Amino acid sequence: MSRDELFIAYMRAFEASTKHLGACTACQNDQPCATGAPVHSEFITRQNAWNERVRAERKQP
Ligand SMILES: [Zn+2]
Image (cartoon, rainbow, N blue to C red; front, side, top):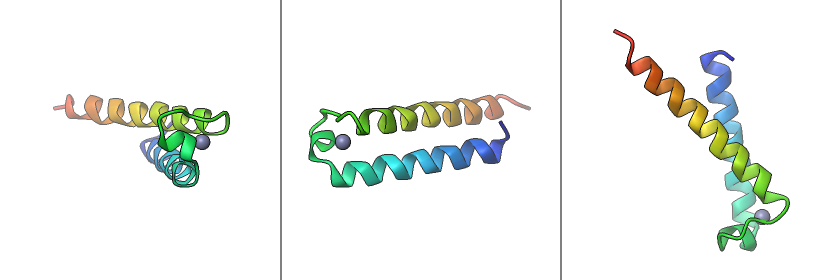
């Protein structure tokens, strides 16, 4: 996956997670619903992948 693809996937996942959170009281109360759980977990996965990428780049000379 390219850097841009990685970032776009991260932003899309962020938007989806934020959008769901805004409309779902269960997820707001830290009790992810069946719909929200995979959305939020996708966001965490994408966020971690992006952070890993940035960290790897910082190690370059
Ligand atoms: Zn939810």
